[in-house]
Every structure is written in structure tokens, then in C-alpha cells.
Length: 128
Image 1: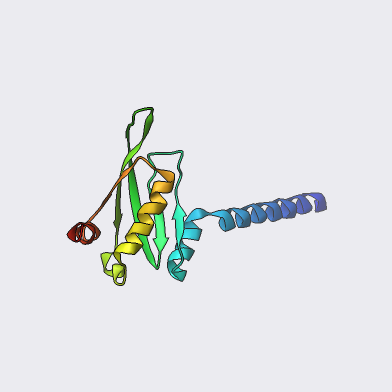
Image 2: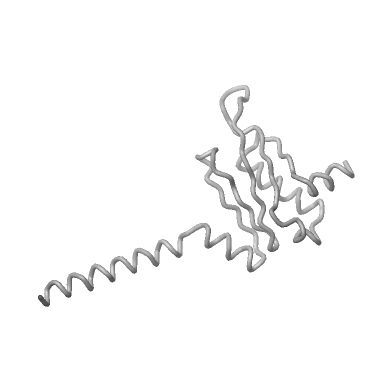
């Protein structure tokens, strides 16, 4: 009986250790932390075109949808549509901030055309 209790306790310790490691390495937790602290964080699964990417910057969460297409040599992401769920938090953002975000996106997807949802798209097209 004592052996069985020890085995259960060891199993619970291993399970809780596993869950702790999973919690620490969870990218969703990292992006939530970056939003709360106002830091920059880019979360993307480059190998999966069907999954959207997320960017946290200065307390705002941006989401990007990737579209696959053809280039001269291969199938790659050729179009990206970026938006934020809460445009009211964009106060204080400038064109330079969005240029920085575009540069970061182009690091992973150099052949992609980036389209911004309104009101960001209106700001970027107004002065160009």
C-alpha cells in the first residue's frame, strides 16, 4: 500500500513539473505578457501558412493573416492582411511604428505584400 502511495505522489510531481514547463514555454502566455507590459513580441508559426501570426507592440495586439501564392520559383506567402481588434489603442502610433512592423514581417515573408485594415491603412495611404 505504501508503495502505491509513493508511486502516485511521484506521478503527481512529474505531472505538475510537466505542466509548469508547458506553462512557462506557452507562446500565448508570452504574448499576453508582452501586451500587458507594453513590450514587443512576434509570435508566428512560419511553417504553417494557415495559422495567423500575432504581434504585440506598446500594448496593442496586431493579427496577421497569411495567403499563399506563387512566386517565380516556388509557392510562398505573397499577401498578408494585418489588423487590430481594438483600434482605439492605436493612439500615439506613427507611420514609423508601422514601417517597423512591416520590416519585421518582411524578415519572415520577403515576397509578401502587406495590406493594413482601416484605420491603419487610411493613415499609411493618406501621406504616400
